[in-house]
Amino acid sequence: MKVDRELVRHLEILARLTLTEEEEMKMIKDMNDILAYVEKIGELDLHGVEPTYTVVEARTVLRKDEVRKGLAQKMALANVPAKKGNFIKVSSIQG
Image (cartoon, rainbow, N blue to C red; front, side, top):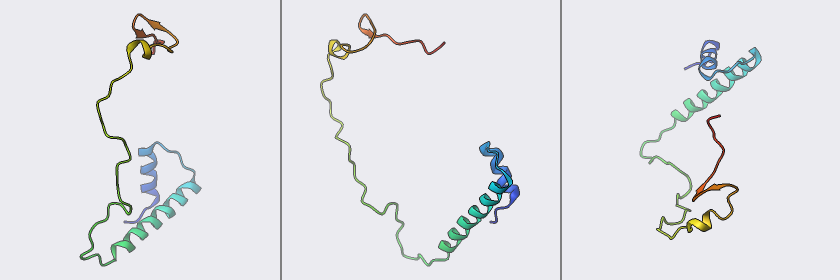
């Protein structure tokens, strides 16, 4: 596949971009360079090589999801700037 001005202009429309002629030319060059690199990778003999999804061991760094006692309502409402009864009062977002 070869990237040309027509394709870049089509992508501009899809992405709602307005590029100068200089930016279009740079985009054409950059995209063609990327495609050439991908084609070069495609020339490698990868028979028998397992796909790699990550180069580092993936592990969860989050805590376990455990049920815990939450804040008491009185404590949760203690520092809110405005409240109405047992609820937090906020400004309207509907205008």
